[in-house]
Length: 315
Image (cartoon, rainbow, N blue to C red; front, side, top):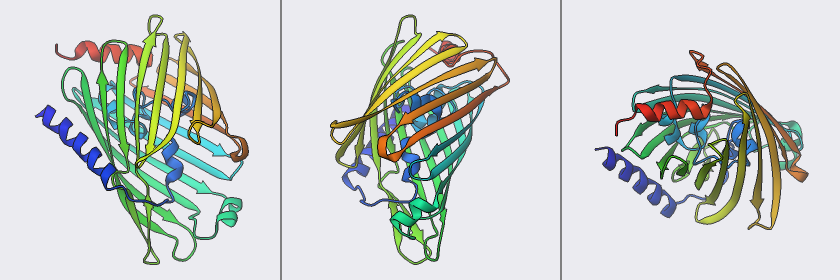
């Protein structure tokens, strides 16, 4: 049964590529991902996905977490007047994991004025996640999302979206991740009778742990429908149990351009505080702050908690 579920999810992802809907919707701001830790690694996180923001990168990652985790993120893209917040929680039950999140994005007056009043001023998304083990080495997961937006006359819209993801553990150090975001394009009906589409995107990548698992190297490739999108490369160095340093690069425009990200994270008992700084040239610089906590506080790192969960899995 578990293998059947994994195959079904993979087939759905394949069909969505063939039936890709074109367009741009008001929630594309969330497509760059959530969480300072992942964004400081240049967004190379689909094969890592081991914190409370996992649903936004690869919903399958929810099944590898332990206990209950709460997370919050705030960011501001000052150059174009976009600010966003996200809060979420994930919970594991043996081989299953569930999650619930809420995202909010605000588009400033300068951006709305530049692009026209058809752009919503406020967008929100509610995300529900379910993930499970589908064998000793594989996890599968899915998100169901409800979008709403508000703006001027005829700008308000609402609609649903679906994401899927797979996470494969090749061995103790190497993992491979695949995710499909907004399958078949998430249509949102506007108050005016027209509709927007959040275009589908697909992400594949790998992550490898080195030097007694204190260093994580990761790479993601994004496909916007059938077209090759950005490439993401990141690294995380766990200097000591209480401090991690991160960096990443995003290759854009068919690898002809790039921008960089750096960040750090500290851990105090079961509380994680992460920061990321992204330099995006004309778009302006972005500062992201994230906080995550474990309930109850375990005092373990992300890696230690994942190892403990692995030890609990049957051979």
